[in-house]
Image (cartoon, rainbow, N blue to C red; front, side, top):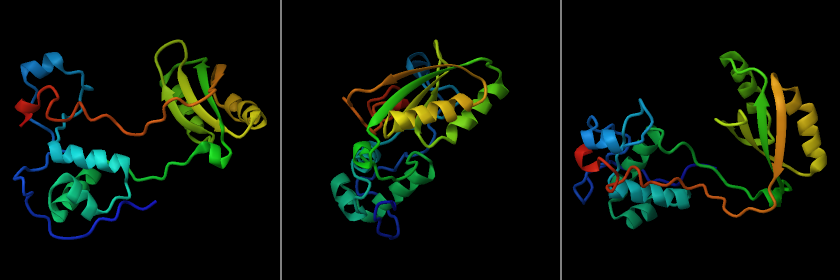
Length: 211
């Protein structure tokens, strides 16, 4: 899928007079932030104003929205909206635009959650397994985890025959496999793609200092 239809034009200042903060590292953390923040070490703190947040919410709900409609919904001019979207894309905050398919409609109704424990845990051995799993098209998501197992995989297949083939001829052949344990999903209760934005908006800890 192509990105949303965005009309070109020279970007000008927002009619609100607020400059976009998308993708811009803020000032060093205050003492309040240092004690209350749980952000990942080494990652720059990013803050968004209300318009940036509105743009991200709209695009997470409908990435095919036109720039003209988007600008009307967030309350700024089309050129300013386009400039903000381009900044969000360039900074990597917007990773890509995709079509989300219904697995059942494409005959991938069996979802398996596969827990994998490795025999050895050296850096090279871990990377070998990561590289192998990344090549399996049945694996939709893979997490390196802390706990009893080393990795958790989300696997989509058509039927149990395909799952057996995946386990026997693919996953079990991956390097350094120790143990495999599988759970099967009976139904989907929630399947959300939107990322919460409560940590980067005006109400987040340290926003006033960052401004």
